[in-house]
Every structure is written in structure tokens, then in C-alpha cells.
Amino acid sequence: MLLPEGATGSRAQPAIRIFGRWARGPLLSVLRLWRRNIQLRVVVSTLLLSLAVVLVLGVVVIGQVRNGLLEAKRQTAISQADGGFAVAADRADRAITGADAGDGTPGRVTDPGVWLTGMVEQLASGGQGVYSVVALPSQLSGQPFGGETAGGAPRGPRSSADIRPEESVPQDMREALDGNAGTHRRYGTIVRPDGSTQTALIVGRRLTDNHGNPYQLYYLFPFTQEEKSLALVKGTITTAGVFLVALLGAIAWLVVRQAVTPVRMAARIAERLAAGRLQERMKVSGEDDIARLGESFNKMARSLQAKIHQLEELSRMQRRFVSDVSHELRTPLTTVRMAADVIHGSKDEFDPMTARSAELLIDQLDRFEAMLAELLEISRFDAGAAALEAEPTDLRDSVRRVLEGAEPLAERKGTRLVVRGDERPVVAEVDPRRVERVLRNLVVNAIEHGEGRDVVVRLAAAPGEDGAVAVAVRDHGIGLGPGEAERVFNRFWRADPARARTTGGTGLGLSIALEDTRLHGGRLEAWGEPGRGAQFRLTLPRAANGPLRGSPIALEPSDAAGSAGSGPTALSARDGDGGAGHGPG
Image (cartoon, rainbow, N blue to C red):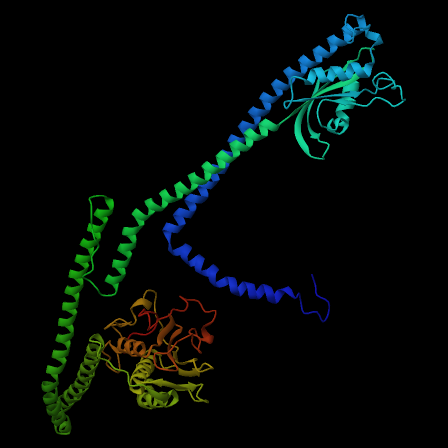
């Protein structure tokens, strides 16, 4: 319904909203308990199904009992009424012939009203409490029951009990008897003088009195006893049904408890195992299926514990080996560096072949030192020794320093570096050294794989204190082929191993960038398509390890919308997933 202009809605709406808010908490608690508790679901389902079965059986049984009582009542009533009708007809015939006048005088001398009253009393004498007898005038008779009394008052209906005869017998049944002299039966309602009613079976027939005048004789059989019997059956079925449903619920609760308790114990033990408490085991008792499940679970836990200890030992040995080798190589590398510097300083005195060898030696030493530094950094991440030294930093300064360092490489590749979104400060609480290392790796990779086209660095900050900041690096180079998205952050993986590299990358750059981003609680994501280039997006919370809700920069660049290819792929530093992009630099 449309509200008239100026109306604000129903006054009940605030009350409905308040009630909704008040009921939401308990309702959610109940729904949560229903989803998490299998024992509750089984018991409630058993109770509902048992209740449905009991209701169906109760309806069927009560229906059968009712039909049986009605059939027995009908047969008894018809038999009793036919006997009474026969007696009334015989007595009327005898009165007409003079064989029985009822008071010793000839039959036609006897008053019809007196005769009919005696007849009703005689027929009802044997059925007190079982049935009532009613005599009503017939429309076929000129005068009701033989005319008027001495006082001129017409004689009324006769009945054997405290009932209202004319209200108890339906009018349509009286008309049916006038139309057909046979026996008629119908379910009706007895009306008492106090206005109370009672269901009954009514059997009637049209007869003649001692003067040959037609009248209607009815037997009214109340269902008093049948209603008591049916009420007793209903009460018995209801009581038995309640006890049966409660018993089935208790049985279901006990059975499900026996099956669910070991499962719950296994779930708790599994959670403790996942938390690192590898010594936890299930308690096993008996030799049934649950006991075999517990034994298998404990065997699995022991095997996992052994494997985890073995892997931890191997990982510890690997980290120690990498760290020891890296440290041990420092000393000979320093010596080689000093000798190489001396040789490189005197290269002008050598022949061209030897001078070129001196330059190659310096280049490879630079690459070797970079690899050692990255191996040491990776070993610190693996050992959990990496620490975050966060401070408020304007990411525009970090981007500016990274681009200044990458400018010589960009000039050699013929690439132009473009910065967008640096009009306003982009401040976040980060570790400047680690963020610059991430950005340096992304920018250098973009230049390496950009095919001499522009590399665009975009900065943005979401509004609000909890908003995130982001830096995206976009190139228009080779992109990625199918299946390479999952391996881009793997250590020592390269998108194109046969491709010549200007910077001599080690294959650990993106792995270290991922660890640096994870240390900040941020996300490092990438999008790429073959021949359409790639975009890497670094998203960081405004506060170190703060909440991160989305990014102010779209992962898929706007100039790639609608292009054919594999579509965007996200690489989350928080999740540690791989995704599309360049090979690590």
C-alpha cells in the first residue's frame, strides 16, 4: 500500500524492529547450536518423526474405533426401533378392531391422546438412559392426535424424557416421513429443556393411532456411552503417545551419545594436534568399531608425529646448512672480491681478452654476493628470526628512491618509468627497508619483462584510519602463459629460463617479497595475460599487522578490461598462494 504524502509509516514499525533486534541474538544462538550439534539434530528429528507417526496412528485408531462404535450403535438402534415400531403398529391394530381398548372399553372409544401417551410411556419404559421416544403429529392428519381436548387446546407432541421434541427432530426428517412411510434414520442433536445439546441417532417411522390417524414415532439414541468410550480411547492413545515419543527421544539421545562422544573426542584431539600438541591421543576401550576407530586415529597421530618430527629435523638441517654455507662463503668471497678488485683496477694494462675476463669476474661476483644476501634473508624467514621495524613512512619517498635506483636499467632497456597517484601523501606504518626491497623487485621485474614499453607505478590510499594503502606496478610486456600463475612465487622459479637476464637475478626475489609482505600483514597480488603484460599490487594495512579490508587499487588494470586471455589471478601474501606475473628477479 502506498503511503500518502507526508506519512512516515506505521507506528508499529519501530516496535517490530526492536523486537527483531531483541529476538535476533537468541535465534542466531539456536541456529548456531543446531548447525554444530549433531546430537541435537538427531534427537529433535527423532522426536518429530515419532510424533508424526504417533499422530497418524492415533488418527487411524480413533477413526476405526469411532466407525466401530457408530456401526454397533446403528445396528442396535435399528433393531430396537423396529421392535418398538412393530409393537406400536400391533397395538393400534388391536385397538381399532376392539381387541384392546387400553382401558377395557372399545378401541374407538379410547381418547387418542391418552392412548398415544400410554404407548410412548410403554415403549420408553425399557430404555431409560439408553434412548428416548417421541411422537409428533403428521401433516397428513387433519387434526393432531385426534382433535382437541375438552378445553379446546390442541394436543401437542409426546416424549418420554426431558427433551424438546419438536427441536430435537429435524424438520426435513419430519417431511421425509410424511412423504414415505418407511423407516428413516439420521444423525441429529437432542435439545434439552435447559438448552444443552447432545449428538444422537434418530430413527423414525410414520404410523397410525387407535383412530387410524397418521402420526410420527421416533427413537432418539444419544451417543453418551459411545462418547465416553471414544474419549477414553483418545486419552489412552494421547498418554501412550506422549510416553512413546519421550521414550524414543531418550533412546535416540542415548544411542547418538554413544556414537557422537568418540567423534567429539576425536575432533578435540585433532584440534590439539593441529595446534602442535602432537602427544595427544584418544582413549580406547573395548573392541567395537569405535575402538578400532580410536586405534586407527592414534596410529595416524603417531605416524604424523614421526613424520612432522622428521620434516622439522630435515628443515632445521637445511636451514642450518644454508646459513652455515652462506656464512662460511663470506670469508673466501671477501678474499676473492679483494683480488678481483685489484685485477679489475689493472684491466687497462691487460690484453682485450684478459680485460673482458676481469669484467665478467666482477659481474659474477656481484651476482654471487646478491645470491648470498638473499639466501641469508630466506634462512632468517625460515627460522622465524625476521623482525619488523615499522615506522610511519610516506610510500611516495620509497617509490622515488626505488625508481632512482632503477633508472639506469630503464635507460638501457629503453623503458619510461611513469608514476601516478603521488599528488597526495600515502602514509603507512611499515618497515621502509623491506617495502623498498619489495618495490625494487617488482619494478626491476617489470623493466626486465616490459619489452621496452612504459612501466606505470600507481599509488593510492583508502579513506579512513583503517583504510589500506597500495602500490601497483604495471608493465605491457610478455605476461604469463597458462599454468604459470601458481608457480610465480616459488623459489628459484623463472617464467622463461632461456631468456637472457640483464640483472642476473637469483630466482628468490619474489619469494623474499612475499615474505616481506606477509610480515607486514599485507597482500601481494598479481594479474597477467600472455602478450598483455602484468600488474603486481602490494596492499598494506595503514598500521602494521592491522586489519586489511580490500585495496584502493583494482587488481586488473582498466586498460585490460575486456581483453581475451586467462583473466585476473590473485596472489595473496597472507594465504601464500601463487599467481600470474613475471619470473622472480
